[in-house]
Length: 459
Image 1 (cartoon, rainbow, N blue to C red):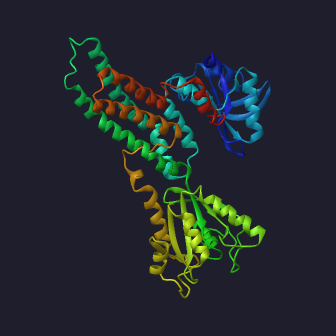
Image 2: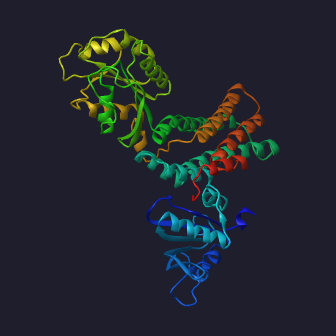
Image 3: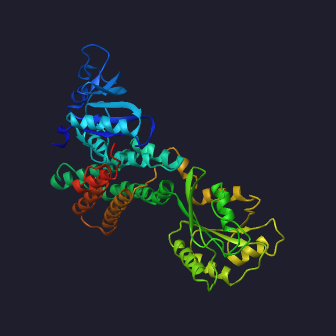
């Protein structure tokens, strides 16, 4: 019933621009568009045109000319939705774009729901659910690495891996069930060792995929990076250097920053969500104390802490408090103000902090390149650049892989315990179905609706 209706929506951003696109898809896409499109050619109809052709003309409302347009014709199944599709490219004013959409709806289409075009591509079998989710990731990409990973998932790289894993599982499940049902023609002699040698590499592949989620999440969402230190150590100066503008106020007065400041930057192809915090110190000022309390809270949500020590000032109780706060967390210790007469040496700072210290001068922009190198090494490890590496960026995918791994490991444990072979098929099929959720072969309607509801209206 859903696919018998013709739907339409604005497929471009609703802002003044050079052009806008109104997408019309469904069995009556050409008939609906013909009712409002006029070509300079006599007796012209979009319904008669070949696919992958563009046609010049005007959108009209009765005898009134609304806009000068180009209409692209794409015939089923060779379109994004696998349905007949017309895309009207008009001038990009918000008023004219809305006017054309209203005409399309008036003449027989209905307004598309969020993600409905992509949902129809999924229902038409052109893409699976993992590729559909990659469409949204592609739209929301914040950096080059996220874009690259989304494009590869959209091209089916993740789906191919999932199908290969499922093929291995279903082949062995089918063999076991055949041998159990027909022992005269299928022998299970030595099969436990053979199955074990097949499942161990599969389990290792699944583990690598599951472990890739931490890097994948960082690439997609960015590294939540907190700049921490006591007052006037140069936190705001470092933020301004990284951001490339005077985002934070910098003075010689301690405690200038009394709240958290947030900015996003791109560094070596990944995103850093940088948070500059109030200096952590003991204070009787209630306003300053609020900022200090917020600084402590954001530490719990940080992927990376940039802890700044001041080379021109000795250690004190505030530094010791911060060290206790970040203990056991992923952190880089920076010794700032190395352009000033030093009270603390890098060796003393390393002894105090218990880890390697990077000397920098935020004011002179010295050591920043080394800091970028360290962040890149810490989070990416070079894995993203490998041609055959797909990183999981979706929590749903990670959970499905984890469930499949758990089922595979239960089979391996059953083999070690000498459990009869007919018990293996239960866990094997659980693994098969868990992986099937990634590509949509075992996906409930409610979950599918939830996934597509996150899309924008025109996609």
